[in-house]
Image (cartoon, rainbow, N blue to C red; front, side, top):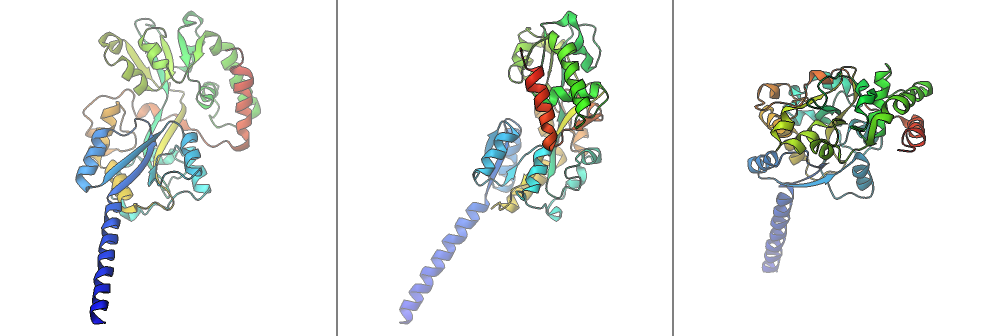
Amino acid sequence: MKRCVWALTVALAGVLVLAGCAKKDAEKKLFIYNWTYYTPPSVIEKFEAEYGIDVVYDEFASNEDMYAKLLSGGAGYDIVFPSGDYVSIMIAQDMLEKVDKAKLSNLGNIDPLLLQKATYDQTMDYSVPYYWGAAGIAVNTERVPDYERSWSLFARPDLKGRMTMLDDMREVMGDALVSLGFSVNTKNPAEVAAARDLINTQWKPNLTKFDAEAFGKGYAQGDFWVVQGYAEVVYEEIAEDPAMMANTVFFIPPEGGPAYIDSMCILKGAKNLDAAYLFIDFIHRPDIYAEFADFFGFPATANIPARKLKQEGSWYTVEELANTELKDDLGEALELYNTAWFESIRVGE
């Protein structure tokens, strides 16, 4: 009988050891769901080497895609990178873990100006900022030597057929709203209508098209001389063309415009919490954040100490973001924008 008990004890111990190993192996993984091409491979590799954690990295192309996948069951992700308006939605729907700030030693590196703008979660209770950026305007100065650093550039008839703006309602409407002195988040029907009319009568007649996918390639090929878009997309397309690089200027107009803050959030029920906190803190280590920013040609917008460690130039500056405004969740007022965009601006494109 004692031998049987001993044998059973040994067997149970073996099961416990195996279970412990399985748990240990599970803790050595981290499942990340992030925007396409948004974390440098070198950063992932350094994290894996330093902590012995295997990162499983999946990508999404839009907040809507990310949100839909999570609602449908997701795939056991630990960290996700939503933009501010979706952080608000996910907080309201109890989809996020509350941040244990005691586990993060690098939060003090985050720019207070960014947190001031992050009205959806200024105290970082559920999210830690990853990057603060905005779309702007790229100009081929060989073709357009004289230009004003303003959204009004799209009102120039002499550039008709050589300009594009993003196929993005909130971006284009936001640019028109700030040009008129209004908020990008206005819910005033008269202000939305005024922005619609500005786009329809002054900007749209000069545009080749609204384009959120191929504007970088079109610019690089010389088809377009002025494009609204994201700096990293434009410069990636012209990187092998020294002449285009030398003749391209990118700026965010001083009147401001829509901006975005993408944040790192831990999903409710995440199974690799310790690894998630290690990764978030790792990203905000100044040397790592500087490496991230240099890789994409970004200014180190979220991390102040990283700005002194950057070794490469940036396509725009933190200061250019000062007058930008985050896009809020508009709620029912979104229908005002939908009507303006789809029934007026996009008609007959």
